[in-house]
Length: 180
Image: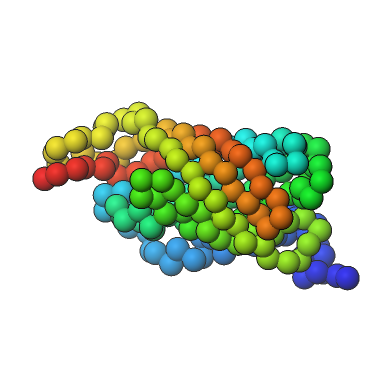
């Protein structure tokens, strides 16, 4: 059976990845601005995973946040197995909302290689930031743009497969301030 990606000349998994990235950025619908609100920003980094079937994966994830509202975080990514076992697909690409309040959650859609079926992506995670510039002022005014590293660990599933993962990211965001 021919997929739309094969017809336009893409290998299916490459086409799916390209489509997910396009949909990810198109879904933001926010024009570029010179000034951002607290918490506006984006981050990117690698993802190392270990599946329930016993195979290792390496992938990527890009995320954007909008304001200091934890529910407004959107992530897109890909996971590539070194040696798939059991029900593990070789590749998975996903688009998910990842709210955080005390602990984080993941809810979205995923596409696995060789399948033209959307899978539910879900899971839980926890992480912490390490400021690199401008710090995070506990009581003060917004100090402007900041760079930070974040480190997250979690468990997630894509349909019938699951994995434990570690995801460090480099973020550029407006400085978070607590208090006035």
